Length: 130
Image 1 (cartoon, rainbow, N blue to C red):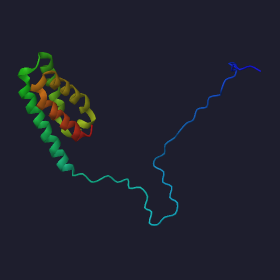
Image 2: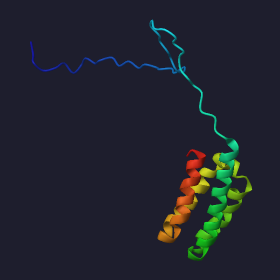
Image 3: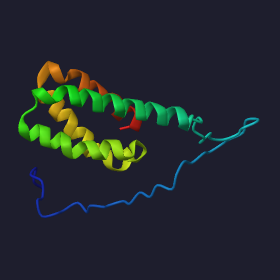
Image 4: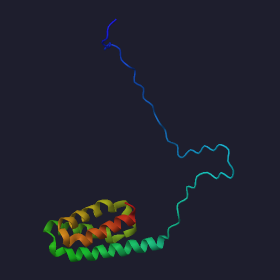
């Protein structure tokens, strides 16, 4: 009998697949069990749209004030981004992530002068749920 492990034997590996089909509720006894509340609170869409539009308008204004501090490449990038921002603020969730990310980079690159624009970008991202 030897104290060294046998390296010729291998342990079989098993893989498992886990499928998720949604929430599972197991109720055992109790009274007046009503399950899971999957409803989200109702949000006033008009107020949200107004906040979104106001924040976009503020960001456009701040970008206008920031332009004298931008390099020519940054200025061209802002020119390319403005139509995306102003065309339809409600469509920003689908296509605005990269646009807002670019604006945040530009605002951060110019330092303290760009801080208000960076804050407006962050507010806009928060409104979009990003």
